[in-house]
Image (tube, rainbow, N blue to C red):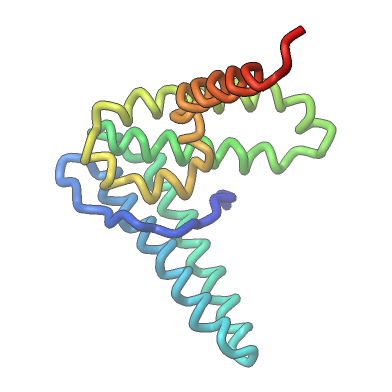
Length: 174
């Protein structure tokens, strides 16, 4: 079972007739949304906790099955490719969690290199998508946490230069 954790979905996923992966990703996002709602519903009453746990287990199984189907489905659009790359990142993390702590330490360098490569490809694919990216943004965010911090690198570097300069301007000079 993939280890993705659901954050809030703010973008509606729209049907994409040319890409079955985008359409399947809508069903996958529906399962995340249904899981959120069912957990809120069953979480209100301690007496229903066992039912809520069973529902969550079933939804997790459905999500896992849908991720498997998506892995066998050829992406026909860059948006579909984005979904598959996000799922690949999550599956890599799930696979590495099967290792013991020592083995995980040995694989960290490779994991981070693979993650950087996939996220770089994702940013390159995302750039020309424009509004089409919105059709998969929510599901991509669920399965590839941390994709966007690199988008801020240039801004942060500039802010750091400005801050450092302002600090040096305040420092007394000999």
